[in-house]
Image (tube, rainbow, N blue to C red; front, side):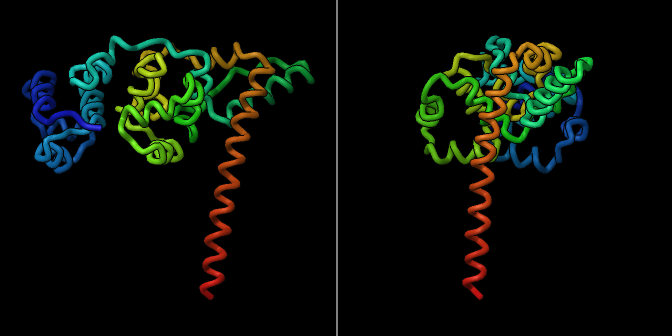
Length: 244
């Protein structure tokens, strides 16, 4: 996903003032040649905008909102739903919470505080899409983006989603426009406007039965992926054996 180079340069002059482009690149961890190539091509990646914003201690969402495709990003911030928060908790953390609760019941032990791994996790994009799906969501997003469904599915399988698609998906699902950017790892929960410890609170408030059902769904998906990988490896092995 990119923004027009001319608008990027105008924005950069506004926010960086007299700081040289070379100094901005060093501070943002961007190669000067990379930015130069983007400017020559006339399109600058949103990742570059985010990196520069962070290096200048500017809110990433506010910075992106200055560009046409993201004008409503800042005003579109909404608190994530319970389902969205749970979607950004890894399979490991869900299972660990179940074990902790069971240990507490069986041994009358004090409840351990949830220490969650950071987002995104290895299936965070798929989990977020499942959490916000209002019916044929994937088909609607692919159709509106004029994108082949299999290409959209490929991004999901790779746990990737472009910023444009993440925001478009959030619009269709009527959830906070920055929430999908957390699932992709483009924004941190804090940058997206999520409350501190929101995921931990959502996990604590989830009933045992609901937690077990969610973990079972995740394990079923994981099982399918593992079987597919095993089949792929077996097919490759068969080819090598036939080749001699």
